[in-house]
Image (cartoon, rainbow, N blue to C red):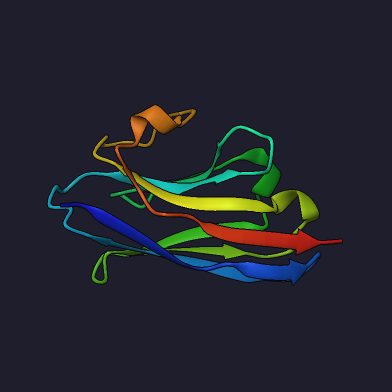
Length: 125
């Protein structure tokens, strides 16, 4: 059984830094795309950043230059380093995983069968 567990998050003032982690267990295939979606109150869930088994990464334009996704294959974990936070980064952040060998150009929820429970990020002005 594949399980994803997020940690980190919390509240921060604009300009600050937060780090999210996602531990993945039970996944036994060599290829994957994993990453983070977020959902702000009253808005649809959007893809934020993704990394595949070859360590190719992709970012939504609004976080480029501020967020960095990385992975530790030995520990089966993802990290999302979030710098220069803005109030519009506020939302519930979800770790997600798909067996697709390359990350989709525009990732959508339906492409990811496995999800974490989410962790809240709140950025105040």
